[in-house]
Image (cartoon, rainbow, N blue to C red; front, side):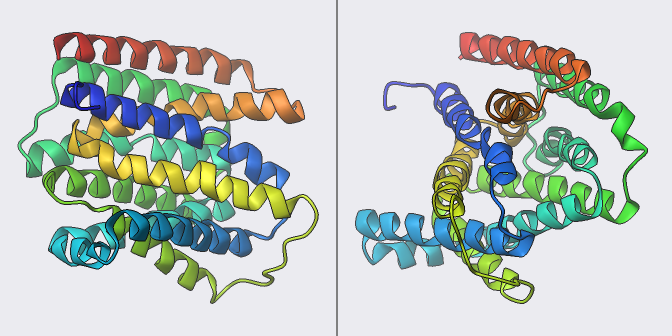
Length: 286
């Protein structure tokens, strides 16, 4: 990593995070646990796993790093906790397609906030990529948009806004390590879920699926995505996460034979080509 440019480091971290996230929807489909139980485990398991690793690496400096994150740390704890909760509640109150379309606005929101707050105006290539990928996501889910619920849709947009603010917060605190703040955010998610959880019981295949999902699809990606905006603009980090829109359904297709629509394949191809060209041009320039 030392020999890589900042563009290469940030792009690599964001891409690897997305690779780990893509089976998430498959694991959710395969699990039988109720929603708030799932939210609880998606908070508590990543909290303990990353916290233990952080203590092993930093020892008691973990708490010093957390305190040193200051105001940025508090903002990131808030946005990180909020997005983890509103994402689930949004899906409960509208269809998944609407939630994903709302979240697809995150790169555009990141670009706008980055220009206003950090004075980092995205270049023409990034703006074109944001617009093309957003239109591709709308194309994929166009038929599902009219089936949504206003409350759930609004929470989906809140999730996108939280992702954008979180990424901008990390970008504005390049010299600070906000991973401990994200760890605390995961603890708050678990504590919030305690008010609504119906059962903690994991049975049969959930004993394997839920912990595996929480480590591979939640713990590892949230560490990587908390680091990535220190190297590349927040809008570029959030662009990578649109890959989950197409790769996630492909995992479901391969494992449980739930075939994606033609629109998903066509729009997904546009997203992949656009992001590949954008990343190639940015890395070439770096």
